[in-house]
Image 1 (cartoon, rainbow, N blue to C red):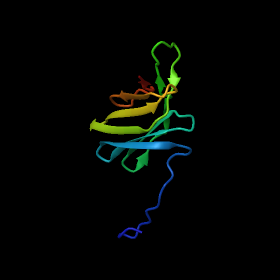
Image 2: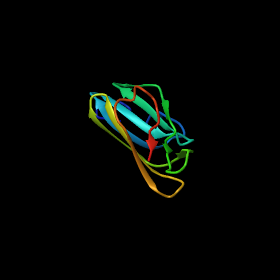
Image 3: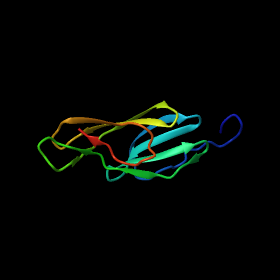
Length: 118
């Protein structure tokens, strides 16, 4: 218990996810990014004391030179904020070809969409 006598326990906020990354995006506001069980990018925002809806931003894809078929990539996430409501999501991923790819999606996440890597 904390000094005020309140019970502060861990609270589950998502199931079957991995590679979480979080960024503060305003006063008492954070954006949480994570990977879902199929590798898709997920986003959930917390404002004040409540969590918003968990939503998918899609599967990150690499565009390999010489191929018309995009390749799904796996990798850790990093997120940072440069101003209120503005989030930069960085994805570092290993492609099927063994290369390391990096992608960055700029701006707020009002419009869902997966970044293309490479």
